[in-house]
Length: 472
Image (cartoon, rainbow, N blue to C red; front, side, top):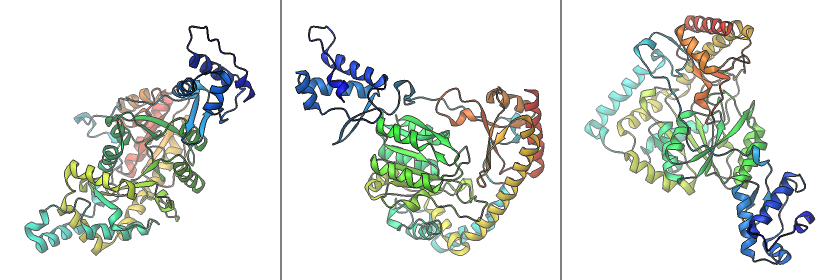
């Protein structure tokens, strides 16, 4: 740090002393003379050397921090930013997420935008019996409010289900919610303050991004790699910002289909602990795994209690159930309970009791196996047709081996918005990648969801998509 002590300050200049010092330190950093992550001298030592008040040094450091040229660690000091200023992302505070509106003209389109299972896979008969049993047993009492945290026998049943994924928890840590989207919104309501920064994967699920933005949060997107977030970028951004939490999906991420490696899951937990932040892990598609290896959620590795785990049953059971759960660290449980109560008091008691009855009688495995067999067949068909019709036209995609969609990179020079409009002219509906980015100008991908389509429609749709690629 000898370079810093060679800085000359002009006490006769109209430029404030703190600005002179800050600009000089910034210039040294820009020239590479102050290495990334190197520690700036202590405030008192700087004040003594330059013959100024400690407030001047504090103000200079704060000015550099506002420009993202340095970052601070509580109780440790101030450090040079690991990124050049021009590469530091600005938090996104607003983003209009465009969704397709359902119109009569789209009713008969081959729809690659829907991720729900077909109606015939819903366990209707089993739920009908569960509904009848609850009504016969409890009469009008079936429709009374339950505990705001949820119906206790259901929470106990769900704890047994979570144990099969390696998540061992008690009913007192489990909150029943009306779907994953409500869980995300409740977490935002309970934890976020206006102007807080939230880290999300880039690309990410637009429903979650919209919930965070609606609470006044600012978002930073962490680039995704083939096995999860880019950890070096995450570490560098954690040094520059102090996010309220990190939002992610460990398996079959929306929209990329990426699953995190064990190494990255452990590293993510280490960074959350080091930089004192929480992780929201959303699980929509972990049940849709098509290999023999059962997913191990991030929460299953969470020995420091940094992960808030949110699971939806809309995909694996029925969308209209509007049922899900959260596993909560002790420190946030009270705030979440209050936010849940002021949102809707409690999730439908009748549906909760019926779900508990269904699970107690039928268990999870039979229906889960049926859904995985169905999803695996659709996945193989979609991959086969994409290889046949899309790869020869210059498109590319990864093989997620799970989930209900493919994340397709379009050939160079093909704009996703233009592509989707042209596909619509051929009566094929596709999700443009721009729906899933918080940043503007990301138009090289599309998502193709195959779960709700027959094999014939998957083939016809892929063929038409290939034709559009050829035309463009």
